[in-house]
Length: 348
Image 1 (cartoon, rainbow, N blue to C red):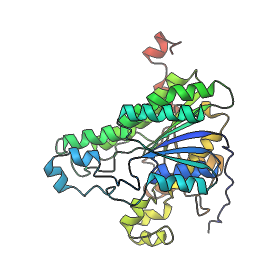
Image 2 (image 1 turned 180 degrees about the vertical axis):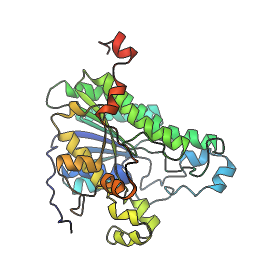
Image 3 (image 1 turned 60 degrees about the horizontal axis):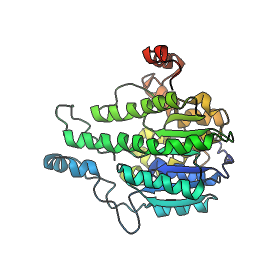
Image 4 (image 1 turned 135 degrees about the vertical axis):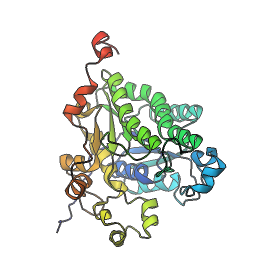
């Protein structure tokens, strides 16, 4: 039997973080983990106590046929809010600041960064966790899928990350100049591999997030700002717990429905991975790579909320074999030394 571990958070006192998409899921778990480390966390999202989230863009822009044929957007009218996330951050020892923002709207994101600059004069960490809202048409080929719905998913999960990084990067770079520590951008994705993910749009979204971290790292390499991608394992998020009809208190009952859930993790686990990365003085050596919550737990020694250290990668391999094929140093070698690196070696 696994002996529960104890957790001592890293010291992120004085650090300023922005978690884009902090309402629920890994975004909320990350905000809480940064809070318990003492950071000031700007928690953004569209679901507030005064205005519940409507159907997501992917549902609204899909065809009438797609809306009827697919499950309803299960983020609509959910109880989680950014105000609640911010309060939970503060309760854990940090300072949570809730800000309503639609990260597809460039003007809103620009205003958000201007506010952080005015109030804090610095930014150490950006976490991009906005997803495609999980409205995947699994079971449909790309020629059967609803195009507008797929494009909306891509906008939700990729364009938001690019827009937010675009406006946040200058402040991250300015902050990193004082040599008190490197800046960091974390792209939250799904999977640390490049194998097929079961649906064209979902496959493109999740591999793009990894590639975005790599490309940003390349352009930030001389700015003392790192960019990495991070994947959680099988999540015990608010939505997943509801789907299995359990709570965090009795989550193991869900194993009767899905045996693999025994290796699941809370959203705090990936959040603690982010906190560990943010506190790593050698983070620039990791820039441009994709990591997993379980792999970073092995490296940094943090545990989940219940003291366990779930290892989705090991569990999956032992049960299903070597089919996830995580990116390794041999894989990354193919990403370097191309025409741009050769001809324009000093750019940027």
